[in-house]
Amino acid sequence: MPTNSAPDLATITRHQRAMFGSRLLIAAVHHLSVFEHLSAGPLSPENLRNQLGLAERPAMVLFPALCAMGMIHYDAYGRLALTALGQYLTPDNRPTLAGYLGLEGTDPGVLDMAERLRNDGPRQTPKGLAFVKEGDAHSPMDDPQQARFLTLGLAGRAQHLSPVVADQMTKRQGHLLDVAGGSGFFTFEWLLANPTSTATLFDRPQVLAVANELLDTFSQSGRPGADTVRSRITFQPGDMLTDALPEADVLLAASLFHDWPTDTCRMLARRFADALRPGGELWVHDAFLDDTLDGPLAVTDYSAQLFWVTKGRCYSRREYRSWFAEAGLEPTDANIPTQMDYGLIWARKPVR
Ligand SMILES: C[S@@+](CC[C@H](N)C(=O)[O-])C[C@H]1O[C@@H](n2cnc3c(N)ncnc32)[C@H](O)[C@@H]1O
Image (cartoon, rainbow, N blue to C red):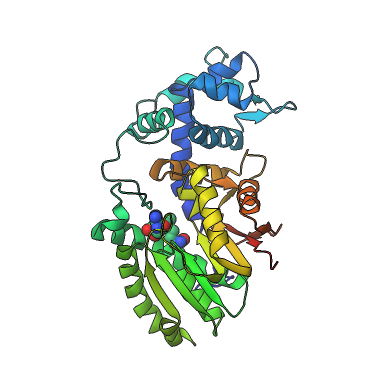
């Protein structure tokens, strides 16, 4: 069983996510001409975004990534400017590496990334996007095979991270609502750490079918208390965007907000605040951009991956805390690292 002394598997996920960062850089040089636009001088982020014809989300994926790579930076006036390194990516610099990066310019991943940046996502999504269910649009999370593939794909990550998260999260008697809880591991471990508490695991029905099987194995693991977990869990299938959510003392949103655009995140924060009892706690486990929106590289690479597969991106703690405050919650200033470049933040619902 992984514990706080288990190795941090970030080394593995960083290599996986770096692929998306590489695509961003090559698309920026070869297809969007970002460095050419900046070669005449610094531009405000909005001005650069307009010149490149990018929507807000792709700009908020691309600009922090190029900053984290050290190719551009924010100057004293908050404008984006080329760094000394970035100068070497302009076509007129001598020497220039623009041509060298261009050798990969027709790589299918790079071509696709350029298209997604211009279009704020893939042009066509007849089968829906991974990990999201919204309205009547087709969602892989409602297809038995796809839901199983995607849920089991995340299960190893959750199994590794969940003991660390349960150890760092609040310990209290009460009811946990694990919204979009996927494989269920975060709920299982939290219940093990809080032996008199109960929980609701809320997700799509096909996802919960997989979680139910994983709970069988967890319950029979022989770990002290594991056999009590099933009797303390309610599986609740539903749509977190529209259905009523059960009341809770603690609400966990793990790798949830990053699948959604900003307006949906605001709406979800309000729904989650409403579901909490007075004195309740909203916990977010995710990977956070720096508030300065220029790194860290591991998270900007991850943001590029999320941009590719979902409707979201990585957000900064400041962005999260602004949604919490708008929803009437009191954000704490706790920044609790866990593993694999993730961390916890949380906010409290006032007692009144
Ligand atoms: C990225 S996964 C995170 C799973 C889990 N929290 C974890 O960290 O392993 C996102 C989850 O959101 C669920 N989801 C997406 N849209 C949903 C909706 N409208 N209502 C309920 N769950 C939804 C998906 O089925 C998926 O299990």
